[in-house]
Amino acid sequence: MTQEEFVYFLVNTLGYLGVFLWHIIVSASILFPLPGEIATAAAIYFHLNPFLIAFSAASGSMFGELTGYYAGKFGNKAAERILKKHAKRVGFVKNYFERYGTFAIFFSALSLFPFDLVSMVAGASGYNIKKWFVVGLVAKFIKTVFVVKIISLIMNYFGFLS
Image (cartoon, rainbow, N blue to C red):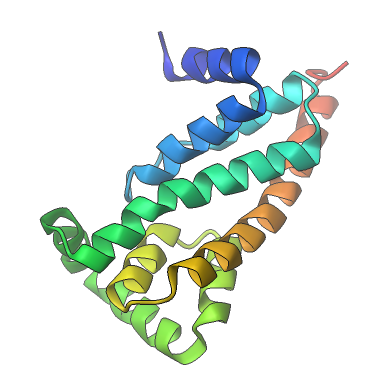
């Protein structure tokens, strides 16, 4: 079974829960890019509610990001290697994070910047997990609403939605 077939199966059989689970998997894989948008596109194809798709994707993503947060907090060897490998980015994130805190989390989750690094730095610096989670969830929800809309427009344009 290919990745696409697995995602199709998840979303077709589990609906919003499938979107949620796929986004946990995608976000839990620290700095290993997997496309979360596959589940989003499948959910749109099955005519699920766009706002519930966005909420399922954003909340699943934040639950998956807990791996990065806790890796930073407890400093496991994998996190240390990742942080060393991306030392330049981590330095930027730490400075940005120390300066702007909540705004850094919000805009990083809203942007295309690797949120895994932000999560690790938040964990390593002891940032309040509830605040990190809520701010990240809101930003990812906003971003995902736009992603859902763009994917819907593209799928509609090419005739995938009827």
